Image (tube, rainbow, N blue to C red):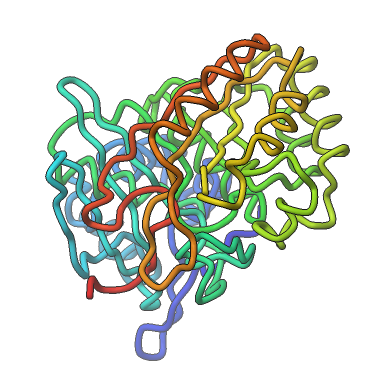
Length: 354
């Protein structure tokens, strides 16, 4: 893995983000400094389990080692630029990394659970027509540590354990595959967040080579694919970033994914009035999903300022669920969280609230 933006300038010194090192690299570094190899496990615990922001907080390390590390390395981390709280209890955060790059993430609590919607890129290069994130294009991909740090920030702000993470924020996770997978593994690891693999979800626009690669990973991470239409012409107009991957190829790739993993993927379908909510569109969707292992998540399009697209009615969403059920396809209507603060699906913009 080649992490992105793993160092920065501090005066004349260039310091490396310690989160960019693997456990083996960290051990080699410490042994080279005359330290015992077990220091790597101690430092890993401080970074990934406790999420400390300063070497001074690593109280079981010798003071001289802490000082040396602070001179040569950073711990990454985030700075809060702004936050908003929704009427439903969700919170949206605009976070800044050390180079000034900003991203948005969302914390969604229930009585006993806390789910984090995290970003894998600053901005997005996929250009989906109905999505606010892609309107300003891609700034850069995030490192595994930067993806992880968003979850740490939300956890610490709510003061409760994170029980699930969905990589459905800004960016296309499979356009940043290595860092996305490294972050997922850290979130899953017992010496990281310890979140069950099935509670870690990746959402992709449908980059087929990466779907195939993902199906071969040993962990049982959950896969969601943004479909939004089973009519090629409609999908191409809505999702120009994946025009080169036809629906036929996607259908085959998802069949192979289900066969190889035995896991049920989800298709996300944002219902847009007058665009993909017709009877014809529904028929094509039923044909695409019939006799396959899948779940369809119907999303009533969330309003985006300045967009020409409008959500279809709640009644139409129920029509889709009923019709899909009639052909044996499990479907539900997603209850969007944080729409009143532009924190719902497709609304993240990477900027201060207006």
